[in-house]
Length: 226
Image (cartoon, rainbow, N blue to C red; front, side, top):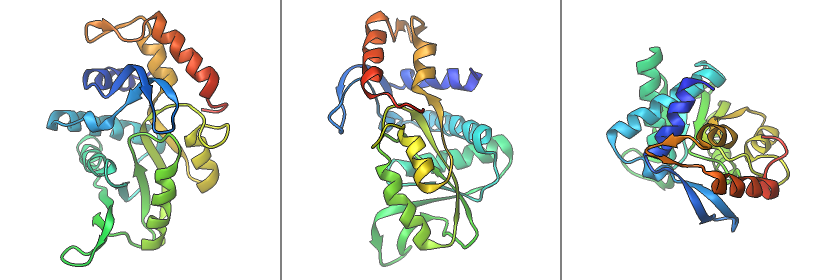
């Protein structure tokens, strides 16, 4: 596993973004883990987060795109942090863009924040995590309504590797529905493999009991294709 992935896993635990225990998700599923990207709240955390996203985008997609689009609301700081990191790490300036939940009719009017979209723009979409694909269902028509853009891909921080609406993972379903690739900084399989019986932040984060709970969860909800 790449070094930056190992560091990112530890970073999620350190930032208390990734927790293990007993959680009820919005879907109603009882999950032994929970990820909350809203727990990244400091400047240093956002700087590091942007760097991990930048490295994953570079590895999975390259840098052949013009705009980094973060859907409102959590995607807004992600797009800003990652676009800054891409400039710093790779010397490439990409524009950042996000949407508003409500259209503004004065000042910086319209539905978009940051860069406007132009015909021919190549767009990378950045999100925290995708469980059902609902966010892309909302984002895709917004992008296409602004200009004739090409969506190059979707990057998220964690692939939960559980079924979306069908038997495949949400990321696989997105690829099938919209025709663009989707990837994550790390998968839950990589997280489990790295943290199982390993001390992180002074504790064993995934012990035998948590591992059994994870195995049971994925036996019930795991995607056939991650």
